[in-house]
Amino acid sequence: MNLGLLAIIIILYLAVLSYLAYLGYKTTSSAEDYLVAGRAIHPGIMALSYGATFISTSAIVGFGGAAGYFGFSLLWLTFLNIFLGIIIAFAVFGIRIRKLGVRLGASTFPELLGKRYQSRFVTFFSGLMIFIFMPAYTSIIMIGGARFIEETLKIDYNIALFILAIIVGAYVITGGLKAVMYTDALCAAIMFIGMAILLFAAYSAVGGITAGHQGLTAIRHLVPEAAVAGGHRGWTAMPVFGSPIWWTVVSTIVMGVGIGVLAQPQLAMRFMTVQKTSSLFRAITVGSIFIFFMTGTAFMVGPLSNLFFYNKEGMIAVQVAKGNLDLIIPAFINHIMPSWFVYLFMITLLSAAISTLSSLIHVQGAAWGRDMVQTWREWKPGPAGVDTTVTFVVRIGVIIGVILAIILAYILPISIVARATAFWFGICAVGFLPALVGALYWKRATKVAAVSSIISGYAVAIFGFVFLHLAESKPFGIAQALFGKEALLPFPWTHVDPLFYALPVSALVFIIVTLFTSPLPQKHVENCFRDF
Image (cartoon, rainbow, N blue to C red):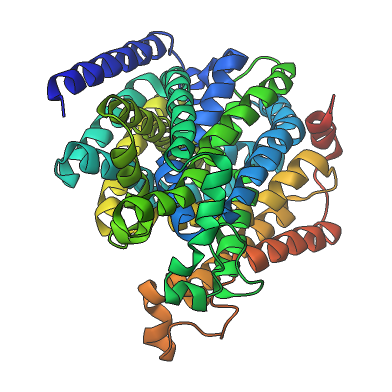
């Protein structure tokens, strides 16, 4: 490894990031600048920032590694990412989120819901849920980036972790959302180049598209016996319908992330940063192509790594990675690519980690300062001029968010990246999606319904994770301690993601309570829906 060349590349990369962060800092003079980039971001930058925030090391390292185990079935998630995460998110949700955010003067996702339903509780509770649960997602982004640095540079994992934390924390604290989005745009460009090269190189390494797929099908007998017993039918086939692996792939990974993307606070905030709604339509094509090369590449390269490793070393990918799915993609890249690409891909993964981390930590800080502390101070009047301290309090929240993410990065087990991502996306869907749809499309929706839906969604999902879904209930150990068994119900409930029953409960509660409670003031509703 040419450490001198690598050092120069990293220094140049960090120098450009620092310059972009400085530009964000210089143009940030108000709380609105810090929280929603002054609502004046160029649509191109917004689109790149959205894509870079959407795609993180969890998609590349974690889900790529999961695809190395489960196979091409994960490509259904790429379809949902493009259809729901880009087309529906921009054209159906994004336009109304932007208009409603401007009309109500909302600067965060919880504040948007709270002002729409005229409920400080909705703002505070939503911010609290984000602040409590988002560190689990933030930490696995750190894990994904740190693991690749560890594998590539052969340095201590702890050092890699702190490098990421310091870089991200520094420019989020100083420059706010403008610094985040400027650096996101650069990161997105680097990510696209790196993943496009990797996709073509991976197929070349296994003899092309046809030879690669045929070869991968031919070695399906190498699938571990435990996986076969769980429903695995090879890397080029869907798992057996209704089997444990089918439920994991479909309910947790594909549906959990595919649906959950519509209620992601860090993505919804991007819609509030542009001046015109028409720019969102122009961003759909760019976003769709970007997502295909990000998730599509990861979900194709992961399975193909099994064929490559079998041809070269007589082992499948999970064996080469010694059981840690998060190491499959780094190991594959280090085997097939020249050193210059390893450097480029390290910058690609750093970009993916930094872009998503910065957005998540910014949202955590905003949840703490804007949605929790400021809302609480409005309930409990404090000294005059509290608004002038919002940016300072948000920065304190950023620091807390970084610390929590680092702590969890030490605690969470191996092969956790994909599961923790699905957990975060799913829990956002069950808590926020019905209330968000009602806020944007149902004039009759009521405050009590929003509160009831959010609480019931989170309550049912948390119950499912603690007592039913084996992937979480087993390590939590609460069901075992209280009832003497790892999960309260037998299969298939042990493998059905809580999203599958928590989201219908949340939606049903929202609809029923709305029909039996008083609507919001007509004047407020008309103001919210004007020009929709």
